[in-house]
Amino acid sequence: MTSLYSTSFSSASYVVTLNATLATTQGHKLPAGDNQTCRMDETSLRIPLILFYSVFFAFGLVGNVLSLYVFLFVHTKKNSVRVFLINIAVADLILIACLPFRVLYHSQHNQWTLGPVFCKVVGNIFYMNMYVSITLLGLISVDRYVKMQRGVRSRMQKSRWSILACSVIWAFSLTAIVPMIALSEGNEERGKCFQYRQRLGAKGKAYFNFFMVAVFWLVFFCLIVSYGKIAQNLLAASRNKPDLPNAHRYSRTAKKSFFVLFIFTVCFVPYHTFRIFYVHTQISETPCSWRRVADKTNEVALLFSTFNSCLDPVLYFLLSGSVRKATMRIAGNLLHLQDSTGNSSTAEFHRTQTLSTPRPSLSMINTLRVQPPSGQD
Image (cartoon, rainbow, N blue to C red; front, side, top):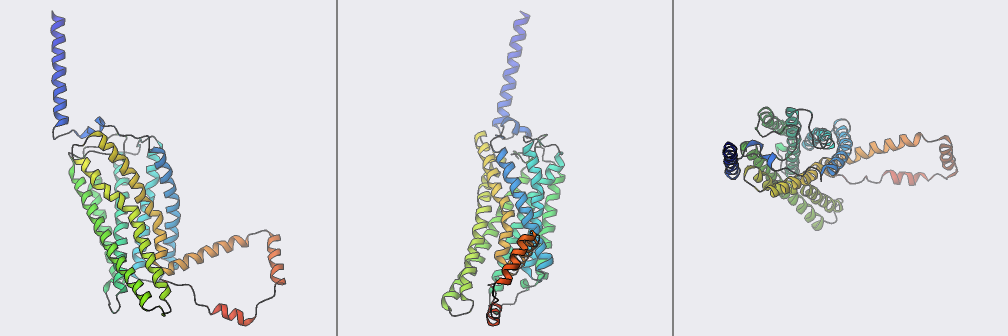
């Protein structure tokens, strides 16, 4: 009789506990550890993420270090675009410095061993520099459009204005991420980092993410309008005045403007288009299957955004002819240095060929010298 009573009491307790659990999960207040009741797929993308982030780190580091060297020590002409490009290169380098920690995390089977505070430092710095780069690219587009208006003298043409704008952006960014690093959201998982998180009890970060998405679309609109106007004016000038010495360069520069828009669109538009749905799943009761879809899609879209840090050095060459010439000069010097270290037989062969080849006339040398250099934006 006692055994039967104990069994009935245990069954009743289990039913009460189960009902309480269902009421909690189906209500409007899920626990902070709800991520544990909906496990994400952490294996299918682990190896691709390691490979892509490693490649982005290698190419992005080389490209942005070379670009920063050119901006600081070779292309020393002071103007607003140069100031913006220096700050973009710095932001990309800081973002790239975060990639080895992502590679380490995924290589350890998505286990974080460096502590929760450092996890928030790496994550917030990564996103901060991504949006710094996006904002500066938008300012460059507006700056180039203003400079293109003939007869318009604007303060935006001065480097002092661009220095002030960059200082404000960096100050706002650092001020914004300090509370995110210092304050706890209450949904941290031990040994985890860069993972999908529910924010039902910490919606402040989610709303801030919505704000950053709005900032991106504002910048994207500025790029479309600015580069669209620039391309339109250049194409019109090349058609209306084809006899101008630089008319053939106008259409080429217009195409470069569209290429800048193309790169920006491919890298950032997918991420910020899907970001709205991703953040919505974090602050609403979404089925577990949709959370898994949000998690995977967000990881893939983030790869495209990170890839922009490797493509920014390409944009530098499109935006500045002086930078192109300076970089080609450095590359030529490196190649010449490699050629000078060749074996003695090869050097002797080239010397013999040079002596046996008749020298061109002085008039031909002068003709080659006076040819105008290649175009410059």
